[in-house]
Image (cartoon, rainbow, N blue to C red; front, side, top):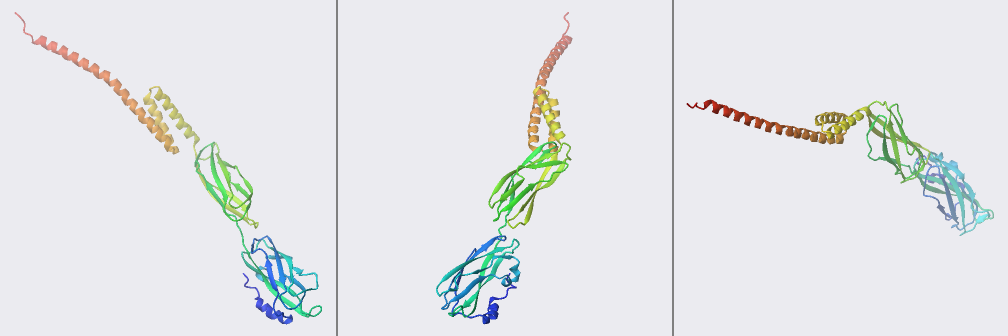
Length: 357
């Protein structure tokens, strides 16, 4: 910036021969913001003290658009650019006078250091009405800065699976970590033929720096939604303080599961429990195995672990039942063997006994 500006030394070399010179220049002091934002007005207070040894006549402070460097000229609007330092005819030696000027910085102004020439002109000399024209050039210097908002989204943990006809809630926090306001924020998540969305907060009119809001996104799967994985976006649109539109996207992923499969999985499990409670362990084991297979397809690892525990318990009960049945059989078989052995012994004894004559 300022590369196209004509050096003030060159201006002085061209203009000063046309004007009178003082033994010293008046003291000029500025009071204004050292930095400002685009789209803002700036008030410039100029205080002049006559430190020369001569009278200053009809002195004015002027911001001329023609003297503003060409590379920043379009960014500066002059609101009040010319004022007389005093209503009196002259400023005596040692006297101080002030004026207030105003400019406006354009919304599209670039960031950088701005130098705007202030022309102080009139006449100088101790003659009545002034002697010769007088010109003094001083720079009004300031910085243009831009305080932009910075929007951040933090998702809390949320279920990444939703069943047909059911909903999941996705909580998140939206924060402004920037240095400027975010205005007219809109939040949306597109709906499709397979799911619909809604947000607890859809609009924020003014979002100041270091502020945050908690928002809940609800996703509802249609009854006949296609069973698969989905990717969508949280779309955030807003304007910065300089009326520039900004946007950000936050990806969201989830899976729609088959609701019939989970209904069947739970039905198998409930039926298995009924059989188990009634002592029908073989039938209970069949239902638990079916439930386990369905939950494995759904990816419910905790439920699968729970059913595995039920299966182990059921198998133990089956083994115990077998053991309970085997004991009487073994006892009966032992008694039968003993009886047969005894009868066989008697028979053998009878057959081997010698007849008595």
